[in-house]
Amino acid sequence: MTSGEPSLTSKEELNEELQALLLRAYETGIDVEGGFECRNGIEHPDWDVIVTEVEKNEQTE
Image 1 (cartoon, rainbow, N blue to C red):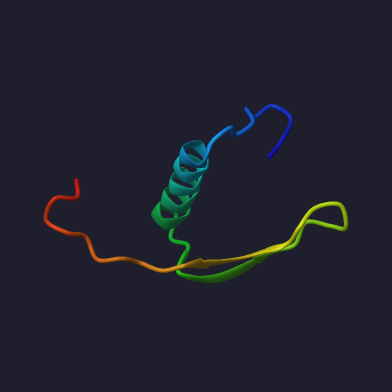
Image 2 (spheres, rainbow, N blue to C red):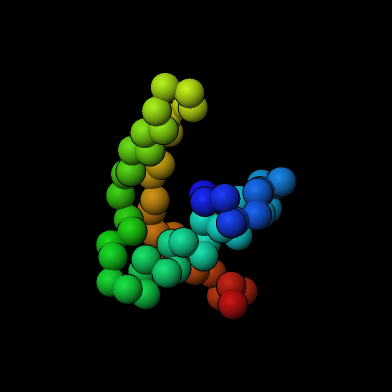
């Protein structure tokens, strides 16, 4: 996140940001499915993110 971006204050906002990021990547042809290591230096924790495509149900819009 850069200094010009608003900070996240809830899991809902985090989900919205992740959804927007994944959609932008998908629309530009990036294969977003798989594992991603997020290394953040000594001062912050590292994360392993796994993205899998899920099947839509009939009620999903």
